[in-house]
Image (cartoon, rainbow, N blue to C red; front, side, top):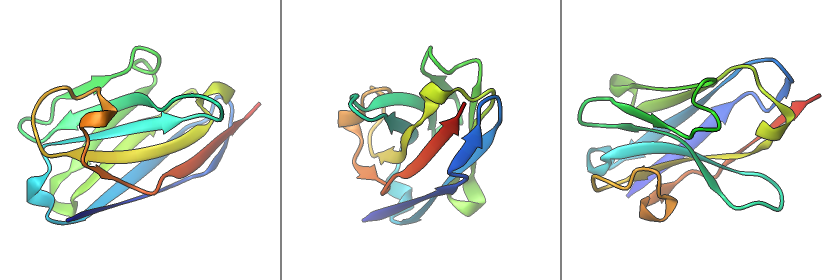
Length: 124
């Protein structure tokens, strides 16, 4: 099994920045891709960003690609999500996720492991 634990700043002012961390433990060797998703109140969960294990290449949602950077620290089994120029519409619960197989990296249904989620609130 794999455990994912998110951490980071929960309340940020509009225009500010934050960095979320996701620490993985357990059978981390089984994880192929790691991703971040978010779910705002009354909305469906949406893909934010992902990073592959093979070469560390990253993929971003169009809505955030100019403001977000996903990165990893292999030695620490940790993935980060740096978000800049935050907007109130970025307010959501952010989830870290991992999947065992290659491909369909934007599709949340393909992910096998999920963190408990962390609330991010951007005040205007």
